[in-house]
Image (cartoon, rainbow, N blue to C red; front, side):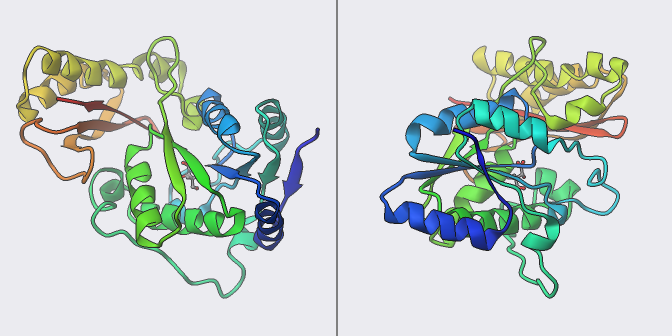
Length: 283
Ligand code: PAF
């Protein structure tokens, strides 16, 4: 069956409402398009868990700060729709910015604590934009469950909190990071990398693995684990580290000693391209 494309929140909500009326279990996978294996793995995870699989494709302008890559963010709707069809998506929701933010639009959702550190500190307003658009997607698609990638670990933590705080009652699932053969986490932004940047980018993952190795040897001191990671990431001449931090995987608060599941997360720029990666250390 061919994929159904819906372009306005009102139409999607009407469709979702009637699907719910027939007892259909709805899953939502929100994306900004430029689909790669990471996105497809989220679709494959959701597919057997629902009757109706909805995927959104929307490059959300409110989560890009001025000077970020909104204009050059890769867009290829027809390829995305073909890939989504192969993964069994029933409905693709592809609104325009005007559909999502009509004239007079003014609401923003803020999670001051979870959005403060890491990517939130480097990209002011980013997570307000994410929380707001995802709330709108939840209200339009009326999903029973939604799947988000664990590469954006902070985003996932924020969306779980949002779901609880605003009583959406949606089951939120995380999908494991998908990597290239050399360890680089898949990202729609990898296409921006020059050949030399691409060669050095796996150092992010290698740095995290070096910390995981020290942790496996019994080291729990955050500063020692971070030094191990920094030595490797910092050895990539083109990497400008934005942050490299160890935080509670639950609260995202700083940890000095890994005594609970802890997130080691890195963001670095390779030229104009900003990449992130993470892994969770579990004592
Ligand atoms: O992770 C993303 O691609 C985006 O932040 C999301 C969740 C689709 C919201 O625009």
